[in-house]
Image 1 (cartoon, rainbow, N blue to C red):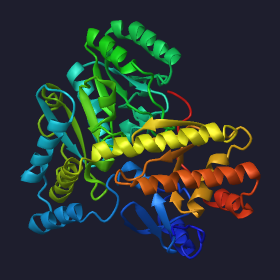
Image 2: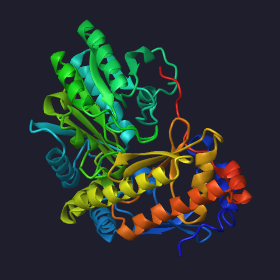
Image 3: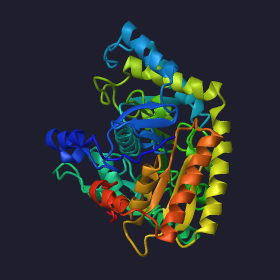
Length: 448
């Protein structure tokens, strides 16, 4: 029923226009697909091909498509008061959102919120808070993390920053992500050496390394991290831009680690993709360390966007969606584990929590194997992403509302494609399409 077999046909004029009118810095491209509409957990391209969406607008469309409650909240608020410039005259909608975020983020201490437009902006806010509050120069980040595409967030991600006499990239110290016991010990050992010098203000970390291929921290790492940071009065900022808003079966991925951060960065799915909006939530004294009016922006606290975010939080709570994510995510993970055991020559490992999963494809014999694998899945009607430092991880991040039947489609499609690869039955046209259209996420491969 859902097929992408006519992939890359009549939409070619749209792709040609893209290359003509939009700068190449805005586009990577997974499959050469231009999307037209969505419904439920499914999307449709300009050619009429339908796909089960397993990328959810880069983990933004957590509730899928055609949620009238959220669209209506935005629409009705836009009719009432589309914009005010919050910095001059706020409305009630972002104030209600701040209340909700204070309630659902970890920590029983007094908290405040800084409103933003995207995770990149809220990440920058977190960095500025750390520097201002602690008056310390250094911030520790982790290799292959992704924290955004603005100036400071690019630097935190390890990409080359714009060069300026006013900024020195040496403000960041880069440690390996603690994905196993050996790396955990290395990180803690580095911290015990660096922190006594008194020049580190904070640690910025993803609770799950997302774009680098859904990499989980070693069990117990965050407890060890929190303990050493507390001894030296160093702040902990967690970037939940991709892992938050229920994607792992809890509101925040850090909730699985049983530690309380000082700052939480929120973006992407805050309004379920219906509006661009983000936030930084943290201890009140940290947030208020920034001067009055120094974190303003014309569209911060945009009333319709805040209303859409409020509606998103209400829907997640009213439908007990977190329980659903935990249940369907567990089933999906277990069935993918069975496929890994069945096809160890093609599938290396499945990782993740809830509905933030990564399936590592063996690229030892062909570095493009994951892209080709994903392209074949799209031809069969399932739209995955492919991520990782080596672009070898199939990312499975569908809307949180997928059904058991949708989960079975995901598993059966992966099984079919794996069987084709093992038997040498993969169509030549699939490889050609992958060569032509599959660009994928550009990762920073070197730590700063």
